[in-house]
Length: 293
Image (cartoon, rainbow, N blue to C red):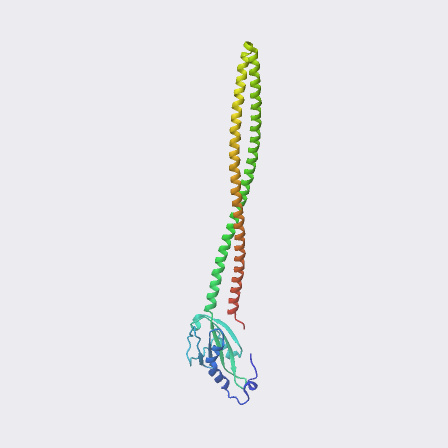
């Protein structure tokens, strides 16, 4: 970027006055920036001023010759009379940098040097590493949450299946209990018939003795049937109570599973928000170190 230095500094400015001005203000420039930067001033041949940053030190010395290399953006800025920017590796000046340079002109518009700033990228690379590691951990956590969700869903499905089976079993017990009740009723009726038969046999006297034996056996069978039916009723009632307790327990487990699923869903949503923020953080860090020509 060029501008009319004659209008800016006046026609009577010496050829080096602008460069000398940069040399004088260089120590103040890095104090104006929010980020910690170094400021270097070159004439066409060498480094004539350097204001170091507070957090890093460049491998440069006053009077050091300008390196005539395409990789040296200070040299390119002076040679081609243009603003330059680049990311320099630590092998160049000892510290990884984002460097920006502008050519300096005299009052005739001739390039007499350049001014450059350097900002360490180490902090931003650390930020990128942290964001990358955090993103990986979030991904692992998200996968674990998905696995937990699938497990809870399977558990809920299994609980429902068991609940359905227990309901069917309870219905079967109800049918058995009904059958046992019918058996008891039949036994009572049979016992009554046996009693009536015994009475009639007694009235028949000697001729009814054989019928009396049959009547006694019928009554015994009725009593035995009733006892077994009562045992069946007792067993079905106890089993029904156990199933009822099982259903209550499964209902509690199912409610807790639903609560856990709800909590996991909220955690998953939170993790998604964190992941989005990490992506924004990464984008901001990358934008910070992005070189704009």
